[in-house]
Length: 345
Image (cartoon, rainbow, N blue to C red):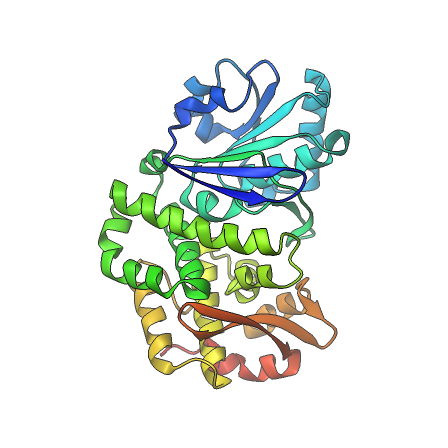
């Protein structure tokens, strides 16, 4: 078992990688804790919840909205939660987001922790202290910055996941390597078979290294004023593709990363050979690197992106594999470049 820490607000977040989820009671007292989870996780791991009060919610993207949070508030009231209470989100990224947001806003903030049960949640959603919900169809438009007390990452839980859920997580792991760790990217290229097979030693190392990248960035820039923006690599395009094409998060981010890499190449920043390596590893991981899309719909979503500032939008581009920077790009220039970014090669 390995651990990391993020020094943030209101407290230090301790991230345990390789811990067994059966140890949950040693992290949060069942008498003071309410667990928020979804029906699928409860059916698989419900034995762990027996000492706890449990709030079951829906894990669909459509349910990640304010009315779901209101339902949770009602349950908090019913259970009589006070400021000595604790909230544990056990599930994928949506459960963690909703649980963290509800805890952060109830009684002006209750302490909470996460047990992420998907690869995507372990390397991304549960780490970093960003908790939010969607509004009017736009992702994470309402949210908070608030660190969980703990994040427990048990890679054994991943064995129950369908392949498409694992691919969502692979996309984020590849993203972390692309923005900050060329050695991890090379390791993924060389050991991808072991990663995809969830080989215990390989997947634990990859999860730890991936979280280390995000934890280091978040510790330096918790509220996304500068360095943390790099974590959005591929996500401006990706979120727009989610809205306009119905792709899952990992698939949309995969295509979004290729579009951002191609834009980096077009702007003379990134070498073409690196773009080819990026496309190759995504394809080998079973992720798409292009998709048929309505460019007008994609640009409409980008126009409404919260990273837009006037007639420009801050995009994360690559200098090389393992090094990223934030570049303001004019919306009109981006619109003109879309044909090249979207074409099948």
